[in-house]
Picture 1: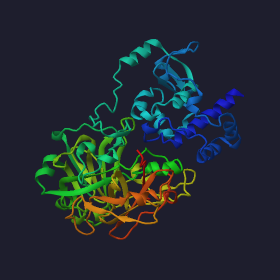
Picture 2: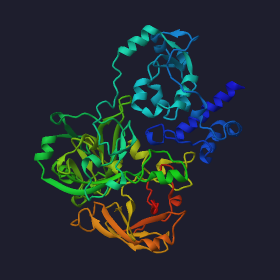
Picture 3: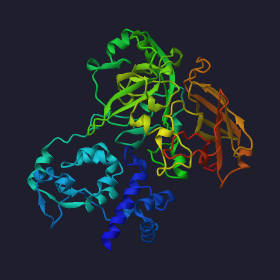
Picture 4: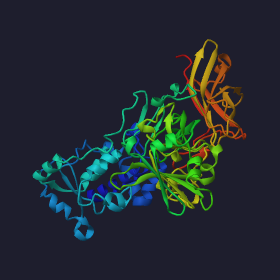
Length: 549
């Protein structure tokens, strides 16, 4: 019975791993969060393991976190009584036909044959480790380094690695792919270390231009180390011909162009959707947005000089120089050609950020800056541009960063049915609120994609019963209609005595909503726009103030 229960328990942990998003992005800020007992988890578990198994789990572990159900685990340590297996023998086990698929982790040997099809990240990636070590892969995807994952691994243990082979492996340079990542400001709130994702505290988003060291960071892979003298940008024409430009070419053969543009992650404010129902994606508060003054060559002029026109071209692809060292997968995305080739869209191959060379975390030496378009298409460390009649086939273009209605979840999602996110909807956030005498002063930001400016921000202390209109301060007041690519900061003052009449649970609760130049208005509630990836979270933003403190 225990072996069957252990198998059930393992499957539950696999389901938990999937729902927590082990495949591509970490969530260090919520490493201890409990998802057991949530309805969607049990539903997924029931589908994977059968209703009877789910019922068994509920009866046995009604309130427990699976990771907490086992003692602390040190994976790969020597286990008395297990046979010793040589590295040569492990290397012979790369498929089922070889008698099973084996891997090593530190001093342990594991048979992962039956686990392969249940791997949350898919079969292809884990099979790359067949007959070898898991360590380079787990170094790249550090979210595996959690107690319940170690528990799953140790259940697959078949032996101890031969001592001499363990010493040999220890002497090898299993370099951390993130070792070259740059130093970051300690003021950033880190959401994931590997890959690095961080946002500034909301209270510091109080200037029209965000300082470089406070600009939010969203990396999908390790930061590549690129020397300016070695940098070359490859451009692939529609007919397959290629051109090449150096950093010096981009800086000196094209007229520099400046644009003030806000970049926002599609997952900004994901935490609000996650509080309603668990989503798959890294944790973000409202700080996954920042604004800079970018300088670079207009992409439209670069393409024009190279003779690339819209004839036969529907999409412009960007491919980054950041890559997954285990699979050689690179980050990529694309934008519609009419945006890329329109001078008014002001798409840049940017080499400066706030009058300084772009920092490593933000794309040095060249970043594609696509004003008014979601951050996922503002590709960093651009190494290749492709003129194509088709959209990029990148994972992040085809199977991520898309929106669905709240009835779609992982059991019935079809990513081919939704277009890739480009322009973002109108959004606002309250970054700070304080009591000053008999007044409450609230400040924040508002933004809308596609060049739509902000024409109004409203703030309420009675859940929409009455509204106060905020004073607006655009990042660049000279930007023209439908070309407003920077956010708008705002400030509102409310009367404290009036606010106190509508307090909730003894606290003052403020809410903001923004209206853009096309009169798009933020939706009131987050639950109506919930989606499985937690993107496009733009309902009224709420901030609670303990007036007495």
